[in-house]
Amino acid sequence: MANEAKPCPCDIGDRSDYGGLGQEVQIEHIKAYVVKPSGASDKAVIVIQDIFGWELPNTRYMADMLAANGYIAVCPDFFVGKEPWSPTKDWSKFQEWLKDKKPTEINKEVDAVLKYLKEQCGAKRIGTVGFCWGGVATHYVALLYPEIKAGVSVYGIVREREDKYALKSPTLFIFAENDNVIPLDQVRTLEANLEKCTVNFQVKIFPGQTHGFVHRKREDINPADKPQIEEARKDMLNWLNKYI
Image 1: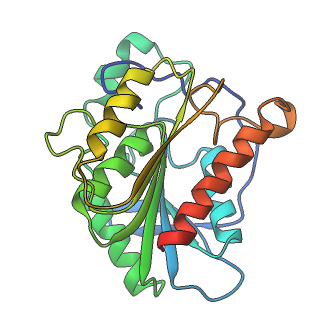
Image 2: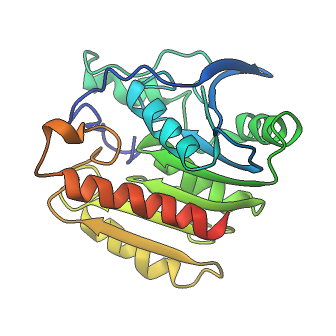
């Protein structure tokens, strides 16, 4: 749900049949997928789902990638048990489905996950990564939680808040050039207005790519896209490594 005003074509690309290396846990009122690095770590990343929910294999693959790079990764169910979107659903019903799943109404869940990471996992430095709906949520968290050391918002922009450019933590925004949900003029407006904020940020557009390219496509069967998929993922890791 990169744009609150339009349905999101997150079903573009290939669904992964990836199984996951972590485990499911209960964190207060929500379930979550948690995966830890092989060695001890006090660095953690909250991975925020797209409209297809916390169980999507593609998103868990990204969490496992973060763990392989030294981060405790947790992917909570930010829909809190509500049914995620499905490509088989009627897109005309999307806004109705979205009403009780706003990416800017997640404070209770974020607070619970932060407490879990600090008290149960020993995390001292925490970041966020989010895709589509989760990209909006990551932008939102960067506006309200200065304790978050870094954020990577992948194809998502907060639109309805007046303080949407007042970032509290360093944030990398990744976009696709051919994203029909987020037109480039909106990306340029975001970039221009972020110049006013007091923390570091970067806005990066990947030429020729479409919505969902970073986590939804399987690079092994999309060889032409593989270099940019890998570059975007490297950018994500480099940003987190720099600030966390």
